[in-house]
Image (cartoon, rainbow, N blue to C red):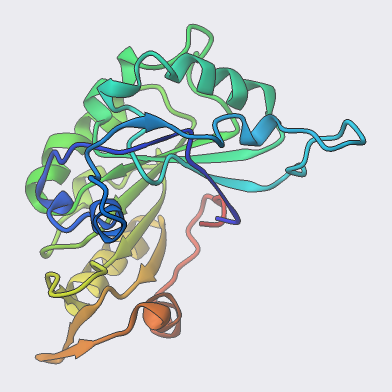
Length: 246
């Protein structure tokens, strides 16, 4: 994702994957609390214009949306409609929204959503089997044009077979970043890749995490190498449906 847009900041932990949340970690480093919610100064970022009257963000860009909060957080209910207005105005941009609150989705979409908007990708996070079985049936039922499953931080071996229908455009997997975080096992990653290949669903290993176990040995990987090392693993797979570049 080339551009990050955080219309609001701050979140509340809701499941196992939140334990070592990077937002909380980064805020703590600045003597702040990651649970404190506020609207940011970049709320209108996608619709800002330059002196020439043209949008500052050019057409075709991929916008990572609300990555320091959750777009469907209840604390954002008073501001979300305006955020949808911005996304509606910029139909020429691709907005990627990840959430651990897919159960709130239908109550948080605009009246003209229909079966979904062409320029919005929704990523449903499931860090373990419990959350996959809780969230993914809802994810497959709600009206969305572009669906991505986010297995991050990957905390255990997952069986996603029952959920890898033609409705899923991509599965992306990543380990946990930070200090003294939980281990991601390379065999878990390869197992999900195998499931995706069998179902012809695109797969991306986007991040190793700080602690990657491979062949029984745990490797400590510095933050700056976690994305590049994941790419070097050569596990990425292009399925039948082309998807936006994450």
